[in-house]
Length: 315
View 1 (spheres, rainbow, N blue to C red):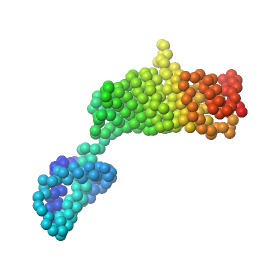
View 2 (cartoon, helix red, strand yellow):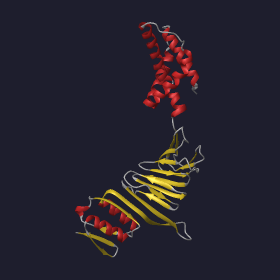
View 3 (tube, helix red, strand yellow):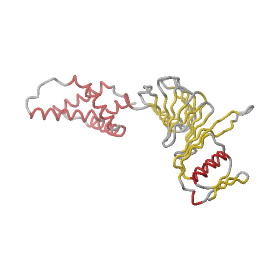
């Protein structure tokens, strides 16, 4: 098992190599091979910001190795400059990956085949469902508690009136101060189920949605679409009855709007074929299925007829 060098050991090792470079002593083949391996790792895992931060950290730690002397001529300055440049190259190869791991690299938690429970430093608990991945920065918890989620997870967030907890998911985010909720992501379909407390859900192109317990936010798998669904428990049953509380579309094709209305209200809507790609922007909040379809027809400049459970939009 390879022994990981501590930060101070890296500084000393780099400085010893630099001394031998100045004295024109050769570096062994084994040391050269080790340097090549570290360089490959460093270039693979680091970006420009991490390289800059690592260079500043390690150079600061090496200051005491360099003697304080005046450089009296341009020639001596140039020689000194090249020596320092050689050290910096070694630093970037040797030290960056260790600095990144110790100070910057985020913690990543993955639930492969079964649920995985993650206890965060602020007291929050996250249950990752199979296939989910949670990324937590080393700075967590900061003034804003931010985590990134792929897949599905249940969050029990420690309460804080001053430090909001934000879950950044695929194309939307959920902001809370302390609550219990579930985030679901299946393809383009996204959802947030709230069990306790309050949350604010935001996604591009639609208004922010505020949930209270037993409510669900979803986009139905359609961009620029958002809905709040009430999930009222059924007496003497484990099931819940869904009811649309609000429904918003922003520049969404008519055929997709109709698909949401049909699935949400269990009805059928017929419309002219040449209108299926017309973009709809509408907020259906508080209306019945009939009122919402009447509003849709008004936007399209069409008339509405109803036959049993079917609404027919005509010119």
